[in-house]
Length: 79
Image (cartoon, rainbow, N blue to C red; front, side, top):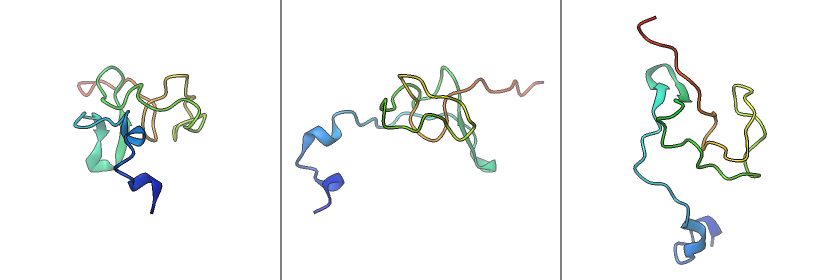
């Protein structure tokens, strides 16, 4: 079988995060950046497993964010 689908092995699922809002910036425009300080994806990545930079070129530290982007401060929509 495929190891990733071995639900009898609890070790594979000890750090699973469920039902946390990633607070994407603008999903209607395919902008999946996550907001600093509010995203459920912030700081839950696995160090050493992620690439050293996200898709924006932001470097990842020893507590990387989950997903393709590191958290960032969103611009103020009021300008």
